[in-house]
Length: 93
Image (tube, rainbow, N blue to C red):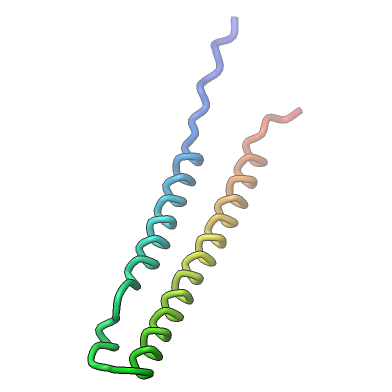
């Protein structure tokens, strides 16, 4: 009689979820730290302050966009790694 098959561990799934949570927290943190007037803009008035605030907002948007781009790249690498692992460990027919 054959022994019962081992329960599959889902290590990759939990690592993948942990990576997603880290990137989500990073995006949220990056977007929320842009609230208010930056220290560099204090003391400015009128159009100068508006320009400084707008530049700060654009910088925040670029930063969050770069984090999202890195997130996509890491997800692609994780998916490719998973596919290669599954192909290497599949049962022969």
